[in-house]
Image 1 (cartoon, rainbow, N blue to C red):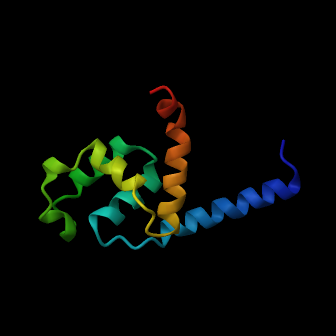
Image 2 (tube, rainbow, N blue to C red; image 1 turned 90 degrees about the vertical axis):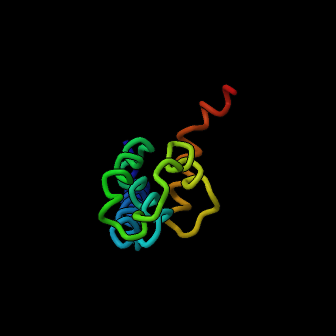
Length: 104
């Protein structure tokens, strides 16, 4: 069980995270990937979403879809953060994959 103060901090943090996602401006392939990763927390679901929405989003029309793969999305998430949401996701991905990286 959490203390009241810890629960309140966690609540505020989650509310901020939700606001960042809801207000995120998607205007490029990179921001699309960051936004979708924030929603799904899954590279494979982001890849599926990119392929499904290729025809409807202007910035995806001229993209060579053969270059959009698991590594491209992973590298986008791990790239230097462009904004607060990207920074949160990058840290979260590094924490999530730390056990895998330690075994190498």
